[in-house]
Length: 112
Length: 114
Image (cartoon, rainbow over all chains, first blue to last red; front, side):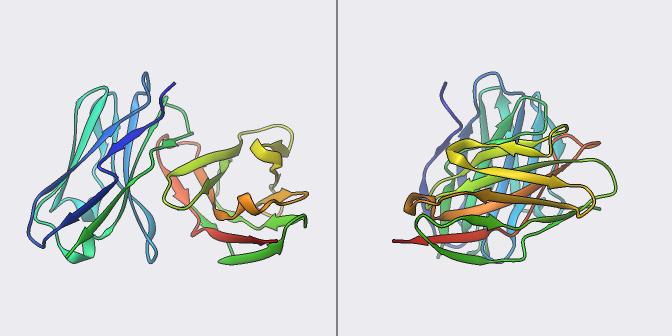
């Protein structure tokens, strides 16, 4: 079975640009998560979907971050507008409704 | 609220030596616990999990972990490390009442030298 797929693997953006990150969960998984990973903050939950319904919107990330799940096999994370402090690795994970999560390889975002 | 503490940010061991990575958790209920590993430029991979039962759980690549309720700990062990085990290891807790909410430790960077 294919694991979680994330594209692109690397993204470089200018400050103020809009970027869209993509994620394909493991086939059949109902839960999808977006995380941001930085050295200072560690892993932070951005969004959580269950069966395409938004369950958690990440509180502090609401203003410029928007995750969508257009169908059960595809999700996007839009950051608009980008700021240098958004430079991080963005991880997507999926799960079957239990407690384990399976992570993708991540997208490394650099905002200049 | 729950928390996970990994007291060692970095651990360095020689190849063939035994390993223990420490993890302490704080949670009033019964926790589900995981160890994940992250190799350079990759996502997190599940090493092992503990839900209930035998407090010693086996994982992939010879890793095992022991759950202790009295010590609120879930330490990771390996009898003999290989240079390819060099990575960052995360101890993770799931609160049993809230599916989908994981609490991550800050990670321990393991460096294995020949």
